[in-house]
Image (cartoon, rainbow, N blue to C red):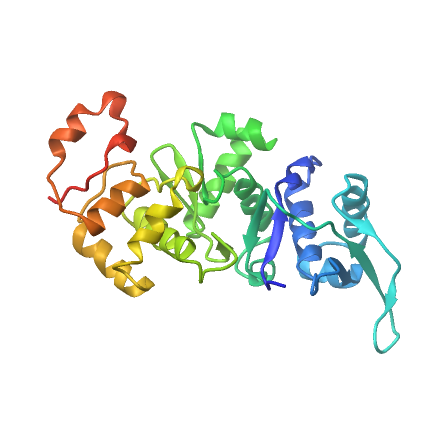
Length: 283
């Protein structure tokens, strides 16, 4: 079993006023899964301590999570010294529609429980396999998340100031290092995509969406670039600048083929659809 924590998109069902804290509580409980039985054991006292909540608040969160079907409560277990009991929670196995987190995300002291909950909720709305989503306005995203636009604007600004997110045009990109693109980074398509994704963000370019990425193109890149370091050097050498939007074919041809000055092509793209470009440009 992987050590990563999988969080389903179904956290979007949580709609209480304190939804962000409750989403974080769900993540903390799920982070206690240690084997393929998909059970987690944690006392309400421990959960309250980890999240900075009162015991009654934790009890309310758990009741709501059970009501929504996000967790099922089993029999409690005594801790080793017998002083108190741990509650046992049962989860279903996730096959699709989940985000991947390093366990440290849930205990990171640099973020509040509310901030973690907001990151988790935003991540659940990101394009498949990515850490970004379209962000046309605070009002539209506030409606999507069920958060008032003024409150959301303040919360997003806090995440940006903390280096947890950034805006690239009308796209919001999550930057938390404990959100993972894939479980198995030994697979070439996964680590290549991760390096290209981070390179795009650094260049202030919207990264390509994974659901339109050809795995064949990603694997082709590893024929010349065998590890993360060599690929990073190749990207730095061959892509001085990037257009606002790119696709994986753009990088495949640039890394493996010849290089062209495509500024003329940029001007010809209808409606500035930079995804049509397949060759890189060097200025």
